[in-house]
Length: 372
Image (cartoon, rainbow, N blue to C red):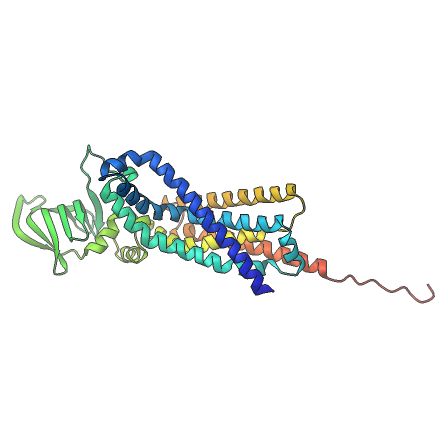
Protein backbone atom coordinates (compact mmCIF):
# COMPACT_ATOMS: atom_id res chain seq x y z
CA UNK A 1 0.00 0.00 0.00
CA UNK A 2 2.73 2.44 0.96
CA UNK A 3 4.57 2.38 -2.43
CA UNK A 4 1.28 2.92 -4.27
CA UNK A 5 0.37 5.80 -1.97
CA UNK A 6 3.82 7.34 -2.35
CA UNK A 7 3.59 7.28 -6.15
CA UNK A 8 0.06 8.70 -6.06
CA UNK A 9 0.95 11.64 -3.81
CA UNK A 10 4.23 12.26 -5.65
CA UNK A 11 2.45 12.40 -9.03
CA UNK A 12 -0.12 14.84 -7.65
CA UNK A 13 2.60 17.11 -6.26
CA UNK A 14 4.70 17.03 -9.41
CA UNK A 15 1.75 17.73 -11.70
CA UNK A 16 0.59 20.71 -9.65
CA UNK A 17 4.13 22.06 -9.38
CA UNK A 18 4.59 21.96 -13.17
CA UNK A 19 1.20 23.56 -13.86
CA UNK A 20 1.77 26.32 -11.29
CA UNK A 21 5.29 26.97 -12.51
CA UNK A 22 4.17 27.26 -16.12
CA UNK A 23 1.28 29.56 -15.25
CA UNK A 24 3.25 31.85 -12.96
CA UNK A 25 6.19 32.00 -15.39
CA UNK A 26 3.82 32.94 -18.24
CA UNK A 27 2.28 35.67 -16.07
CA UNK A 28 5.71 37.05 -15.16
CA UNK A 29 6.79 37.05 -18.80
CA UNK A 30 3.65 38.99 -19.77
CA UNK A 31 4.48 41.59 -17.13
CA UNK A 32 8.04 41.76 -18.45
CA UNK A 33 6.79 42.40 -21.98
CA UNK A 34 4.44 45.10 -20.76
CA UNK A 35 7.43 46.86 -19.20
CA UNK A 36 10.14 46.31 -21.81
CA UNK A 37 8.42 44.96 -24.93
CA UNK A 38 8.95 48.12 -26.99
CA UNK A 39 12.68 48.12 -26.22
CA UNK A 40 12.95 44.44 -27.14
CA UNK A 41 11.34 45.00 -30.54
CA UNK A 42 13.43 48.11 -31.25
CA UNK A 43 16.67 46.33 -30.35
CA UNK A 44 16.15 43.41 -32.74
CA UNK A 45 15.36 42.68 -36.36
CA UNK A 46 11.72 41.77 -36.88
CA UNK A 47 9.26 40.78 -34.20
CA UNK A 48 9.33 37.04 -33.51
CA UNK A 49 13.08 36.49 -33.06
CA UNK A 50 13.68 39.35 -30.56
CA UNK A 51 10.66 38.29 -28.51
CA UNK A 52 11.75 34.65 -28.53
CA UNK A 53 15.31 35.59 -27.58
CA UNK A 54 14.15 37.82 -24.73
CA UNK A 55 11.85 35.07 -23.44
CA UNK A 56 14.59 32.45 -23.43
CA UNK A 57 17.03 34.79 -21.71
CA UNK A 58 14.64 36.01 -19.01
CA UNK A 59 13.01 32.66 -18.30
CA UNK A 60 15.83 31.09 -16.19
CA UNK A 61 15.95 34.00 -13.76
CA UNK A 62 12.15 33.99 -13.45
CA UNK A 63 12.11 30.22 -12.84
CA UNK A 64 14.84 30.49 -10.20
CA UNK A 65 12.77 33.06 -8.31
CA UNK A 66 9.47 31.18 -8.68
CA UNK A 67 10.55 27.63 -7.87
CA UNK A 68 10.52 27.91 -4.02
CA UNK A 69 7.12 29.64 -4.01
CA UNK A 70 5.74 27.23 -6.61
CA UNK A 71 6.90 24.18 -4.66
CA UNK A 72 5.28 25.44 -1.49
CA UNK A 73 1.97 26.28 -3.22
CA UNK A 74 1.97 22.95 -5.05
CA UNK A 75 2.36 21.06 -1.76
CA UNK A 76 -0.41 23.14 -0.22
CA UNK A 77 -2.81 22.49 -3.11
CA UNK A 78 -1.94 18.79 -3.19
CA UNK A 79 -2.82 18.16 0.44
CA UNK A 80 -5.78 20.51 0.36
CA UNK A 81 -7.14 18.44 -2.55
CA UNK A 82 -6.49 15.21 -0.64
CA UNK A 83 -8.36 16.66 2.33
CA UNK A 84 -11.27 17.89 0.20
CA UNK A 85 -11.90 14.41 -1.20
CA UNK A 86 -11.45 12.79 2.25
CA UNK A 87 -8.38 10.95 0.95
CA UNK A 88 -6.23 12.46 3.68
CA UNK A 89 -8.72 11.16 6.26
CA UNK A 90 -8.47 7.67 4.77
CA UNK A 91 -4.67 7.87 4.73
CA UNK A 92 -4.68 8.95 8.36
CA UNK A 93 -7.14 6.20 9.35
CA UNK A 94 -4.95 3.61 7.61
CA UNK A 95 -2.16 4.43 10.04
CA UNK A 96 0.11 6.31 7.63
CA UNK A 97 2.11 8.78 9.70
CA UNK A 98 3.29 12.25 8.73
CA UNK A 99 6.92 11.07 8.39
CA UNK A 100 5.64 8.46 5.88
CA UNK A 101 3.86 11.21 3.93
CA UNK A 102 7.03 13.29 4.04
CA UNK A 103 8.98 10.36 2.56
CA UNK A 104 6.31 10.07 -0.15
CA UNK A 105 6.85 13.65 -1.35
CA UNK A 106 10.61 13.67 -0.76
CA UNK A 107 11.61 12.41 -4.28
CA UNK A 108 9.63 15.21 -5.93
CA UNK A 109 11.02 17.73 -3.45
CA UNK A 110 14.56 16.57 -4.28
CA UNK A 111 13.80 16.87 -8.01
CA UNK A 112 12.52 20.44 -7.55
CA UNK A 113 15.55 21.36 -5.44
CA UNK A 114 17.93 19.92 -8.03
CA UNK A 115 16.22 21.90 -10.78
CA UNK A 116 16.41 25.04 -8.67
CA UNK A 117 20.14 24.59 -8.11
CA UNK A 118 20.95 23.88 -11.77
CA UNK A 119 18.92 26.84 -13.03
CA UNK A 120 20.39 29.28 -10.48
CA UNK A 121 23.96 28.03 -10.86
CA UNK A 122 24.25 27.30 -14.57
CA UNK A 123 21.47 28.97 -16.55
CA UNK A 124 21.07 32.31 -14.74
CA UNK A 125 24.73 33.45 -14.98
CA UNK A 126 24.83 32.75 -18.73
CA UNK A 127 21.51 34.39 -19.57
CA UNK A 128 22.11 37.43 -17.38
CA UNK A 129 25.47 37.98 -19.10
CA UNK A 130 23.69 37.86 -22.47
CA UNK A 131 21.06 40.34 -21.28
CA UNK A 132 23.72 42.74 -20.03
CA UNK A 133 25.53 42.52 -23.37
CA UNK A 134 22.21 43.13 -25.14
CA UNK A 135 21.34 46.02 -22.80
CA UNK A 136 17.60 45.40 -22.44
CA UNK A 137 15.30 46.49 -19.61
CA UNK A 138 16.89 46.39 -16.17
CA UNK A 139 20.20 45.44 -17.80
CA UNK A 140 20.37 48.54 -19.97
CA UNK A 141 23.53 50.59 -19.39
CA UNK A 142 23.08 54.35 -18.87
CA UNK A 143 24.11 56.45 -21.87
CA UNK A 144 25.12 59.61 -20.05
CA UNK A 145 28.15 58.29 -18.22
CA UNK A 146 31.08 55.98 -18.83
CA UNK A 147 30.93 52.59 -17.12
CA UNK A 148 34.05 51.36 -15.35
CA UNK A 149 34.60 48.20 -13.35
CA UNK A 150 36.43 48.80 -10.08
CA UNK A 151 37.86 45.87 -8.15
CA UNK A 152 40.43 44.96 -5.58
CA UNK A 153 43.29 42.59 -6.38
CA UNK A 154 45.48 42.08 -3.35
CA UNK A 155 46.79 45.49 -2.33
CA UNK A 156 46.11 47.02 -5.77
CA UNK A 157 42.97 48.68 -7.16
CA UNK A 158 41.97 48.04 -10.79
CA UNK A 159 39.80 50.19 -13.03
CA UNK A 160 38.65 48.52 -16.28
CA UNK A 161 36.71 50.29 -18.99
CA UNK A 162 35.75 47.16 -20.95
CA UNK A 163 36.14 43.41 -20.61
CA UNK A 164 35.59 40.58 -23.11
CA UNK A 165 35.96 37.27 -21.32
CA UNK A 166 35.67 35.12 -24.45
CA UNK A 167 38.32 37.05 -26.37
CA UNK A 168 40.46 37.59 -23.29
CA UNK A 169 40.84 41.34 -23.80
CA UNK A 170 40.65 44.45 -21.60
CA UNK A 171 40.10 48.08 -22.53
CA UNK A 172 41.15 51.26 -20.68
CA UNK A 173 43.04 49.47 -17.91
CA UNK A 174 44.42 51.37 -14.92
CA UNK A 175 46.22 49.68 -12.03
CA UNK A 176 46.66 51.75 -8.87
CA UNK A 177 49.58 50.10 -7.11
CA UNK A 178 49.56 50.38 -3.31
CA UNK A 179 51.84 49.29 -0.54
CA UNK A 180 50.87 47.07 2.39
CA UNK A 181 49.55 50.10 4.30
CA UNK A 182 47.25 51.07 1.43
CA UNK A 183 49.23 54.12 0.26
CA UNK A 184 49.37 54.76 -3.49
CA UNK A 185 52.88 54.27 -4.89
CA UNK A 186 52.39 54.10 -8.69
CA UNK A 187 49.80 54.21 -11.47
CA UNK A 188 49.96 51.81 -14.40
CA UNK A 189 47.70 52.56 -17.39
CA UNK A 190 47.12 51.02 -20.82
CA UNK A 191 44.41 51.52 -23.46
CA UNK A 192 44.39 47.81 -24.32
CA UNK A 193 45.43 44.48 -22.81
CA UNK A 194 45.07 40.82 -23.77
CA UNK A 195 45.60 37.46 -22.10
CA UNK A 196 48.72 35.75 -23.43
CA UNK A 197 50.74 32.83 -22.10
CA UNK A 198 49.07 32.85 -18.70
CA UNK A 199 49.35 36.60 -18.07
CA UNK A 200 47.98 39.99 -19.11
CA UNK A 201 50.03 41.88 -21.68
CA UNK A 202 49.47 45.65 -21.55
CA UNK A 203 49.95 47.48 -24.85
CA UNK A 204 51.23 51.06 -25.04
CA UNK A 205 51.50 51.10 -21.25
CA UNK A 206 52.68 53.95 -19.04
CA UNK A 207 53.75 53.72 -15.40
CA UNK A 208 53.97 56.83 -13.22
CA UNK A 209 55.69 56.58 -9.83
CA UNK A 210 54.04 58.82 -7.25
CA UNK A 211 56.29 61.58 -5.91
CA UNK A 212 59.26 60.71 -8.12
CA UNK A 213 58.16 62.53 -11.26
CA UNK A 214 59.09 59.41 -13.21
CA UNK A 215 56.96 58.19 -16.10
CA UNK A 216 58.01 55.06 -17.99
CA UNK A 217 56.52 53.95 -21.32
CA UNK A 218 56.47 50.40 -22.67
CA UNK A 219 55.01 49.15 -25.96
CA UNK A 220 54.38 45.78 -24.34
CA UNK A 221 54.38 45.22 -20.62
CA UNK A 222 53.47 41.98 -18.84
CA UNK A 223 51.41 42.69 -15.74
CA UNK A 224 52.42 40.26 -12.96
CA UNK A 225 48.92 39.93 -11.50
CA UNK A 226 47.63 36.35 -11.59
CA UNK A 227 44.08 37.04 -12.78
CA UNK A 228 42.84 34.81 -15.65
CA UNK A 229 39.77 35.94 -17.64
CA UNK A 230 37.38 33.45 -15.99
CA UNK A 231 38.38 34.57 -12.50
CA UNK A 232 38.26 38.24 -13.52
CA UNK A 233 34.75 37.79 -14.92
CA UNK A 234 33.62 36.13 -11.68
CA UNK A 235 35.08 38.97 -9.63
CA UNK A 236 33.37 41.64 -11.75
CA UNK A 237 29.91 40.01 -11.86
CA UNK A 238 27.46 40.16 -8.98
CA UNK A 239 27.91 37.09 -6.71
CA UNK A 240 24.27 36.10 -7.35
CA UNK A 241 25.08 35.89 -11.08
CA UNK A 242 28.25 33.82 -10.68
CA UNK A 243 28.45 30.00 -10.95
CA UNK A 244 29.35 28.12 -7.81
CA UNK A 245 32.76 26.96 -9.05
CA UNK A 246 33.79 30.53 -9.87
CA UNK A 247 32.40 31.81 -6.58
CA UNK A 248 34.63 29.32 -4.78
CA UNK A 249 37.61 30.57 -6.81
CA UNK A 250 36.89 34.19 -5.85
CA UNK A 251 36.50 33.27 -2.17
CA UNK A 252 39.82 31.43 -2.28
CA UNK A 253 41.54 34.54 -3.72
CA UNK A 254 42.01 36.92 -0.78
CA UNK A 255 41.53 40.59 -1.59
CA UNK A 256 39.82 39.98 -4.94
CA UNK A 257 36.44 41.37 -5.96
CA UNK A 258 34.28 44.40 -6.57
CA UNK A 259 32.42 43.91 -3.27
CA UNK A 260 33.33 43.08 0.33
CA UNK A 261 34.60 39.55 0.80
CA UNK A 262 31.72 38.56 3.08
CA UNK A 263 29.20 39.04 0.25
CA UNK A 264 30.91 36.44 -1.93
CA UNK A 265 30.89 34.03 1.00
CA UNK A 266 27.23 34.83 1.70
CA UNK A 267 26.09 34.05 -1.86
CA UNK A 268 28.28 30.96 -1.92
CA UNK A 269 26.54 29.69 1.21
CA UNK A 270 23.13 30.77 -0.11
CA UNK A 271 23.66 28.87 -3.36
CA UNK A 272 24.18 25.71 -1.33
CA UNK A 273 21.44 26.38 1.23
CA UNK A 274 18.60 27.46 -1.10
CA UNK A 275 17.68 24.00 -2.52
CA UNK A 276 17.44 22.23 0.87
CA UNK A 277 15.49 25.23 2.20
CA UNK A 278 12.89 24.62 -0.54
CA UNK A 279 12.68 20.99 0.57
CA UNK A 280 12.15 22.13 4.17
CA UNK A 281 9.32 24.43 3.05
CA UNK A 282 7.56 21.53 1.34
CA UNK A 283 7.94 19.34 4.43
CA UNK A 284 6.56 22.13 6.60
CA UNK A 285 3.39 22.21 4.48
CA UNK A 286 3.15 18.41 4.84
CA UNK A 287 3.44 18.78 8.61
CA UNK A 288 0.72 21.46 8.78
CA UNK A 289 -1.89 19.64 6.69
CA UNK A 290 -4.37 17.44 8.58
CA UNK A 291 -7.76 15.82 7.89
CA UNK A 292 -10.65 18.27 8.21
CA UNK A 293 -14.41 18.06 7.97
CA UNK A 294 -16.41 20.67 6.12
CA UNK A 295 -15.50 23.27 3.52
CA UNK A 296 -15.07 26.02 6.12
CA UNK A 297 -12.41 24.07 8.02
CA UNK A 298 -10.65 23.19 4.78
CA UNK A 299 -10.73 26.83 3.70
CA UNK A 300 -9.23 28.00 6.98
CA UNK A 301 -6.54 25.34 6.72
CA UNK A 302 -5.69 26.55 3.21
CA UNK A 303 -5.51 30.15 4.41
CA UNK A 304 -3.27 29.11 7.31
CA UNK A 305 -0.96 27.31 4.89
CA UNK A 306 -0.70 30.34 2.60
CA UNK A 307 -0.03 32.62 5.57
CA UNK A 308 2.64 30.26 6.89
CA UNK A 309 4.32 30.15 3.49
CA UNK A 310 4.29 33.93 3.23
CA UNK A 311 5.84 34.28 6.70
CA UNK A 312 8.54 31.72 5.84
CA UNK A 313 9.32 33.40 2.51
CA UNK A 314 9.51 36.83 4.19
CA UNK A 315 11.73 35.47 6.97
CA UNK A 316 14.08 33.90 4.43
CA UNK A 317 14.41 37.17 2.49
CA UNK A 318 14.86 39.23 5.66
CA UNK A 319 17.68 37.05 7.00
CA UNK A 320 19.42 37.10 3.61
CA UNK A 321 19.14 40.89 3.47
CA UNK A 322 20.68 41.20 6.93
CA UNK A 323 23.55 39.02 5.79
CA UNK A 324 23.99 41.08 2.60
CA UNK A 325 24.26 44.21 4.76
CA UNK A 326 26.92 42.58 6.92
CA UNK A 327 24.70 42.46 10.03
CA UNK A 328 24.84 38.65 10.20
CA UNK A 329 27.70 36.24 9.45
CA UNK A 330 27.34 34.70 5.96
CA UNK A 331 26.86 31.11 7.14
CA UNK A 332 24.27 32.17 9.73
CA UNK A 333 22.32 34.27 7.23
CA UNK A 334 22.27 31.51 4.60
CA UNK A 335 21.53 28.47 6.76
CA UNK A 336 19.27 29.89 9.51
CA UNK A 337 16.03 29.64 7.45
CA UNK A 338 16.76 26.00 6.62
CA UNK A 339 17.44 25.17 10.28
CA UNK A 340 14.30 26.97 11.48
CA UNK A 341 11.99 25.42 8.86
CA UNK A 342 13.41 21.92 9.38
CA UNK A 343 13.10 22.11 13.18
CA UNK A 344 9.54 23.46 13.00
CA UNK A 345 8.45 20.79 10.49
CA UNK A 346 10.06 17.98 12.51
CA UNK A 347 8.56 19.28 15.78
CA UNK A 348 5.04 19.42 14.32
CA UNK A 349 5.35 15.94 12.86
CA UNK A 350 6.67 14.45 16.10
CA UNK A 351 3.96 16.14 18.16
CA UNK A 352 1.23 14.87 15.84
CA UNK A 353 2.72 11.40 15.86
CA UNK A 354 2.75 11.31 19.68
CA UNK A 355 -0.88 12.47 19.75
CA UNK A 356 -1.90 9.82 17.23
CA UNK A 357 -0.19 7.05 19.21
CA UNK A 358 -1.71 8.22 22.48
CA UNK A 359 -5.20 8.11 20.97
CA UNK A 360 -4.61 4.59 19.71
CA UNK A 361 -3.22 3.35 23.04
CA UNK A 362 -5.83 1.10 24.79
CA UNK A 363 -7.21 2.30 28.11
CA UNK A 364 -6.99 -0.30 30.90
CA UNK A 365 -10.04 -0.47 33.20
CA UNK A 366 -9.68 -2.10 36.61
CA UNK A 367 -11.90 -5.14 37.14
CA UNK A 368 -14.41 -4.91 40.02
CA UNK A 369 -13.49 -6.72 43.24
CA UNK A 370 -15.21 -9.98 44.05
CA UNK A 371 -18.16 -9.59 46.39
CA UNK A 372 -18.12 -5.79 45.94
